[in-house]
Each structure stands twice: as structure tokens, then as C-alpha cells.
Length: 495
Image (cartoon, rainbow, N blue to C red; front, top):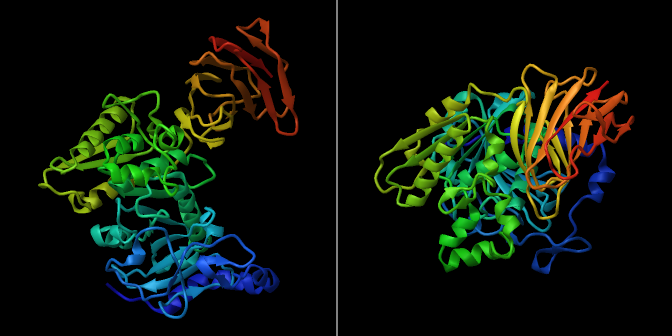
């Protein structure tokens, strides 16, 4: 491991320091209040638990696991910018690229009362400001973010390619991809992107075991074209269904997953919290096609790997089932298997081959055919979920009809209102537009078509029945409810 000079990280922080020095009043107002007993601050929301700052070591320590503790006091090599949002320190590196450890306060982790921690290896050339490809490496259950560095060759491979390597902790070592851990990752990515711009077309997720669940789950739940999206994913022996893991787990695992730092209850008590992060919930041992949110990733290259002699045979079974499921649906998937004895480890995966599979496929134009599972309102590729019943996952299929100015919205479930970006689908509102719509649950779906700067001349069902509509000139949208009972309709919009 190679130490890196302190001026590297100071250079990295220079932009933040200059910005804060330009606004000293704001920085002073944001300074942390004196620490109060029990890890709280006076006059502010409680902070995470505090711990005495210690020098960094790659050996396991008591501070590696559990909820992230905020280091205080002298020593440990920590540097803090004037804004209390984060702390950073240089650590010894596994490659010739420098590595830093970063700690986010709750203001940047996005999770009240909880800090996040991550390791970042970066090429010196990235300090110039050009967007840089990046790998987000997720650790397995019960260990820290040091695992991808110590257990895999990712540091060397990323250094050779000139890529960033980001290893998040996920708030706690046993996070199981729960939503707060994913929120904290967004905070980490935003911070890195502020100082070392990430190439948004080449952001890859790599995970082992629980970490593979994290990679798939973050990828499927983050499909906003303006946000952080994975261009490819490496899934090494990941579980697919958090509720299934609870069911087969021992009493200790059940208690852990049900506690407030994970899912806040059992699957029976909190079914939505488990399902919303599970890529492929199981039904009778098989993937349930109605709930397989991994379909959000059919356009994303996925490299699956397992050791056929892995002592956790259920992970082998799930990996093989996922490969068959994605392949049958036209996914961009490749399966790698090995016979490596009774070993559950990073090392059974040929990481170079996995990255070679992903690298030629940056994010491009949005797909014009998609099956979406949306667990919250927001942008999902070429559509925006506007409203859905509470504690539910909206499901729908959106397809551009080739060779025509037309699209289909089908198989909708738990969907109240959806906006469709016509331009993203390659459709033109200045020409006659045709829409086929049908609900799978017998409910009415409000539809908002984006791109109508002018109101249409007419909107009709099957070419002759007038369909009520409204036009919003300020938002350039056309709103309608195609089918009040979910039956099949053909809508014709004349400009």
C-alpha cells in the first residue's frame, strides 16, 4: 500500500474552502455547536454517536461496524472544512492512486441522526475537472467498506483504467440495501461529484453477497435520467428477496432486520419496506414476475457470478434463477460460474472479465420500451410517476410502437397518475399521436403527455368518441383519463 501526500487531499478540498471563505458568515452560521453529552449538539438535532479520533488502519476495529460514529478530538489525520458537512483524511492506498476516507454528517447523508462513511480512490488526473468513470463497490454482510479494497482487485483495476473507486458503508454493516442506506449513497455521490466530476454515462455498481443486493437495488430504484444511474452492474452471489432472507434466517437475523436501523419490523408488519428494495421477490421458490422490479434494469448490462460450490447454496440458486429470468426477457445479462470449493469470497470472481463486459456499454439514449416498478413518485426513464396509492409499488409497461407516432401503456397496477415524456420516446406531438392504454387492475389511470405546447384539435377514443381532456399551457402538457374502468382503449390525438 502506498501513502499519498497530504497536499493531494488539500488540493481536492480547495474548491470547497474557497467557496466557504467567500461566504464566511454562512460558514460560521453552519459551524457545529459544542458537543453535548450523549452525542447531541446544543440547540440542534442529535448527532450520531461520537468516538475518539484514532489513526486509520486497514485492520478491523471496533469502529468499523455498527452505526457510524463521528470522530472527535485531535489525532487520526482528519481534516474538516469550515462547513460541518463532512470530514476527510488520507489513508494508505492499495494502488498508486491516492485514497481518502470521508465521513458525511447527517446534513449530507440525508438521514436524520445518522452519519455515512465511505472510501474513495481517485486518479490524480481527475483533479483537473474532466468527468471520470466510477465504480461503486458494495461490501457484504457484517463487514465494512474496507472489504472491496482488501478482498478484491478493484483498486488495481480502477487505477489501471483511470477510474474512481467509491466504497460506501451504507450507515451500518448489515444494511441489506434498506432505503436509508441508498439515500446516504446519493449524498456520497453528490459530494464526490462536486469535487471530482463523475462521468454520468459510466457509473458502475459492483457488489458481493449483500453488496450485490445493494448494487441491483440501487440500480433498479434510481432511474432518473438527471440523477445517478448505473450504466452496468456486477452481481456476485446476491440475495434477491429481503423478506425471503428474513424467513430463512435465524432468530438473531430476524431481530436485526426488524430493528429500527433496518426495516423497522418483520415482513408481515412492514411488507412494503422489504419489497421496495428487493430486486426479485420469490414466490414458491421462483421469481414472482408481477413483483420483479429488476425489470427496471432490462436495458442495463448485468454480469452475474457465483461459485457453484458456495456454502450458501441458496445464493447460487437465486443467481441462476435471475440469469434465466433476465435472459428470457431480453436483458443484457452474462453469467459466470466457477467451481472453487466451499468458498464464499470476492476472489471467486474474475473482476477484470466482469469490468471488461461492462466497459463498452455506457449509458446512451433512454430505452423506448420499458417495464417499470416505481416505489415512489419521481422520474423513471421516459416517464414520471405522479401519484400512486400509499405503501405500494406502481407497475406499468411503456412501449414505443416502431414505425408509428404511437405508444402503448399496459399492465398498469397501483397507478393513479403518470406523465410520459413524448420526446424521450421519440414521439412528435405536432403529428397525429396514437395511444393504446389498458389497466391490469381495473382502475382508472390519469395520463399526462408532456410536450404539448399548444392544445390539440381533438382527442378521441377509437377515432370517433370524444374524450375529455385539459391542456396546461404553462407546463406544455395534455391531461386525460383514457379508461375509467381499465378496459382497452385506443386514443387518437390530432394536433
